[in-house]
Image 1 (tube, rainbow, N blue to C red):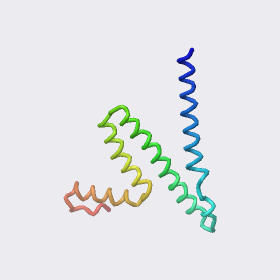
Image 2: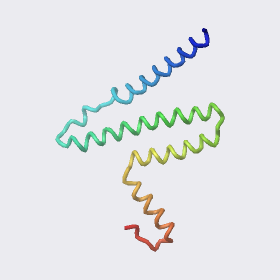
Image 3: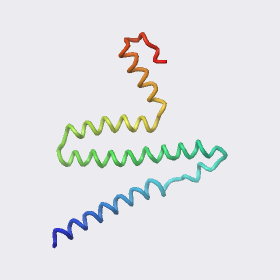
Image 4: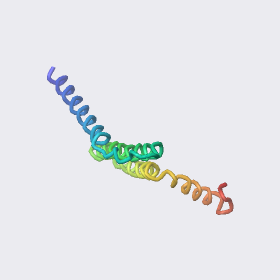
Length: 114
C-alpha cells in the first residue's frame, strides 16, 4: 500500500512540474508585444519562439535523465540531435543552406542544388 502511495505522489509531482513548465513557457511571456497590423507573421514568430523554449526544456530533461542513468552514448546523441533541432527551430532558413552544402559534398561541388 505504501509503495502505491509513493508512486502516486511521484506522478503528482511530475504533473506539477509539467504544469509549472507549461505555464512558465506560455503564460509568463510578453505576447502582448506582438499586437500589430501584421498579425499572421507575428503569431508565427511567437509560436516559433515558444517552440524553441519547449524543445529546450524537453531536451534538457532527456539529457539530464541520460546523465542520471549514466547512458553516455544516448546523452551525446541527444545533445547533438537536440542542437540540430534547436538550430532548425530558431533559424528555419538554415535548413536550405545545410541541404545545399550536403548536396555539394555529395556531388563534389559540380551540382548547384537547384
